Image (cartoon, rainbow, N blue to C red; front, side, top):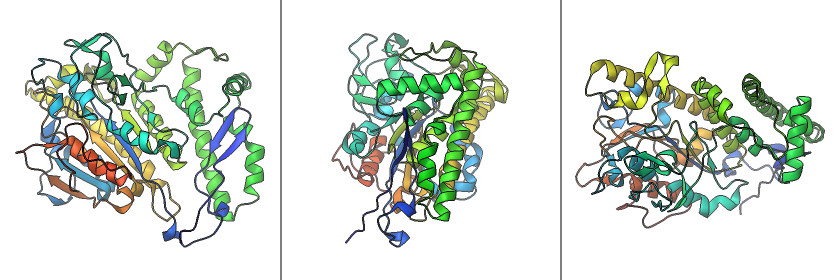
Length: 453
């Protein structure tokens, strides 16, 4: 017989709902740690324009990972959680008779496995994405069925790539074949969403009050927190204090950014124009990515959601990376023509992205689960791009990582190379992940079978 574990899920205050991590003191019983079930989480992190494949590939055979080199070097401290998947393909990112437009197809087909209709009008069509397939099945178990986060804002109309709508190259998550899920790129908006109550009127008033008096969301729940702390054991009291401190630190970082934009405090039901804030974040890319990673980690830690997407930039992004002394645009550099200097700069961008990913993984590894594992033990994170080499615009042998142990269902710390003929669709990986998330499917997109991991 399973022992039911229950806990108080949130601290409540005026317009505020602060979800909590698992606190053993609030369990209805105290079973052995190994009998406590923890949820699995699924995330997809996308990088645009492909990578320098020469520095992605590792100089050792398949099997147990040795010392990682090149672009993957930042993952060495956590390589036991990393699975390198070589040889997977995204056929629907290819033209297949539709001519140019590889960037739009790369991002829109990455999670759907479907060929996007070539149009820049309102008749966009591709397919439901892997994250939404899972979210629609298990999203009722969490406050948010899924989270769609991002770094670069993007529209869903206009011609962005050789006759393809901007919707294709700006959106990773698709609710259905004609409806992309707009991503949220403002950390403050994400924070407010995660830590706000359910009453819209109360929420707007509370936000205005916090802005006016420079209050924290925690100020609204401190009485509740003090009452709760009295019921906890010493270990859980410390855990609660550490968690609330981390929330406050995250909030302060976002407030600092808000102040730096010199925007007026938002008024109830009146959104702040995004232009100046977006410019602030463009100049602080690393801080922006890491805040989004922190917010996603909190959402997973408190079981606010179990499914998320986070592209580090839109596909075809021409963002310069001046913080690492790369002044040229990323997309321009990706058409390197085998020029050594351009390839070196592409490698610097790829390495920089990987360093941010390593930051996220380290964060997940630092968060303890109630059964003695870490959050990184219970996630499955796909990291990769729908383009292989940005110069060739190839969509076979994609740069794909699967990170996390999926609650002990994945033998990680390995490199696996799949046969190139016949091609193995990337969507076969998603079928394997669906099974581990408790929503098995016979097919998805252009899949041909469940990938063996």
